[in-house]
Length: 299
Image (cartoon, rainbow, N blue to C red; front, side, top):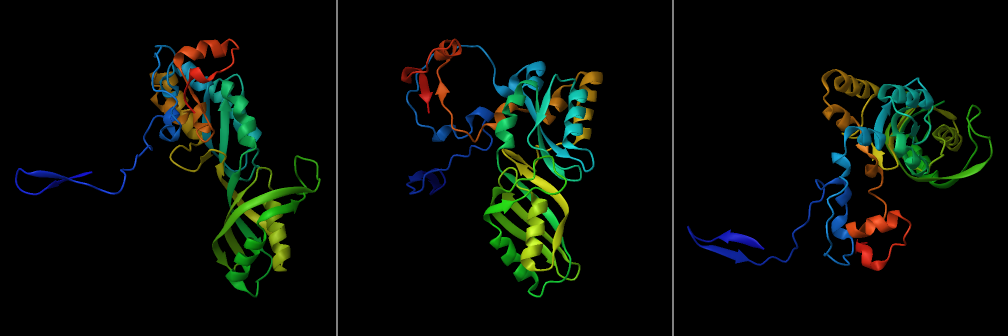
């Protein structure tokens, strides 16, 4: 409905066909997609216990936190995660899937209690931006390169590169989508984006592109732009950011920077199906009772 001012003091309500859209982008973390869930009942007794993910005390916040880290080039993923553990003085840390030392980009680091989510993120899809170097000019130019990229989508056979951390067995990996960003035939360089299944070797994909184009090719540079639920964006931080945030807390007792750098583990799970349970049912479920229909609010 829209209010239309017809004269100085006269307001008329004019009917509208469209339904006003609900903007949920600034809703709290656990309310993502809340308006799309089926409502069973709206009546329950709130129990003033626990807290929302963002208002936990700092110790619990860090030990149930994840960091969307921009991995620098040269150190290995294992080294980076070990540094994070030392900086934050955490008991254990894990990451969302190994990146080669020279590869930069999105590495999700899980701290303490959040490390049990590592497996779910390692198996999630990944997105990369890659610089490929061809070994010669191609007669068809950019159009031929785009065609080759389109050909290499779907399920592909891949054997891990000569230097790799896994057994060199032939395996099938899926490329969901790829896009050409830039191509320079004179300098034999191309830049493309690819969305793929976990465990896909982009280095092997570049070699296959070279074979398909008939000139040979290799991977020059690689950056991961998305890993599972997190990608490049305002939430991505560097190792320096984490170190500075810890320093500010140690010296000034200001925890706002640490809370900015670390996200609650629930941020990895907003894409999963969920149910909303009544406060009164939580205790019984925690002690092993089965969750029954009367205990549900939304699903």
